[in-house]
Image (cartoon, rainbow, N blue to C red; front, top):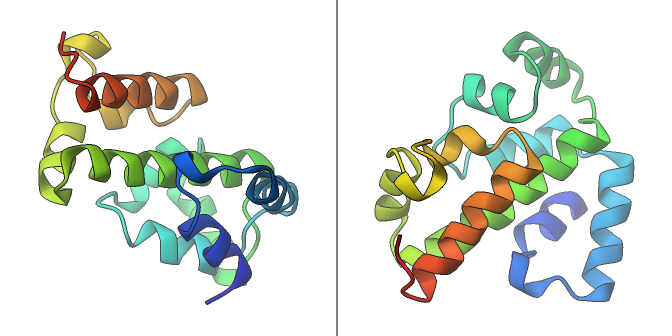
Length: 142
């Protein structure tokens, strides 16, 4: 397993200590190679079109990254890390992958009627989803 995959896969949002944070900063600054992104993306129920939307790019650009195992940009790398952390948190909250995936794909009144995964294209949106997961975790339902 590559260093990038180890850092991202072992970094839940609840484990961001200083040492890990500096590793993440370095990783974001350098960008992750497409092969590492591909491995991480395969762990989640999103297709290439959705990943393109989350990363504010096209599927064609992702294909070009794949062809040359090019590195994702800083912003894209940071978004992948944010989504990875959110996914780990959500699975922990729901205690079941399928229940969490169903929730991610359902309109949510507390999120303004948005489908949670449709908010993954911005950090603000990801934070809103994370906040909603925190409320669910603590039994505070809208």
